[in-house]
Image 1 (tube, one colour):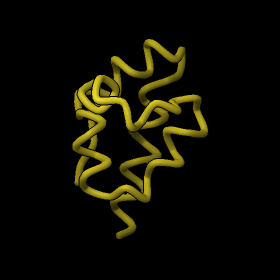
Image 2: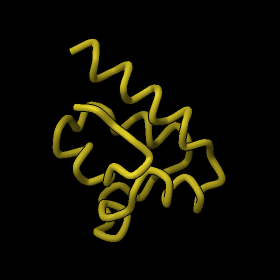
Image 3: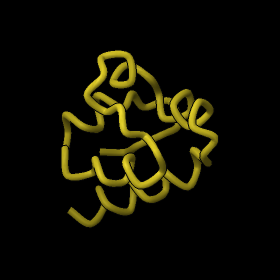
Image 4: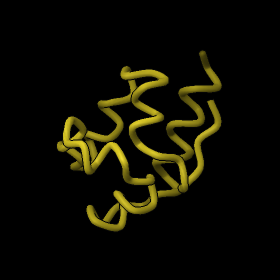
Length: 66
């Protein structure tokens, strides 16, 4: 899977739920909420005041290693 800032969080979690801790460690504790699953990485990071590029990079490194 290739992740971008426009990738929907629910799609990422459906691909591999093992990445949930990446979201939790930056304060995104609402992963089970239907609204959060429909947000893009960029939208969610804006709400939580975090860097979307850093999260995208971390996710892509994880998926490339699989």
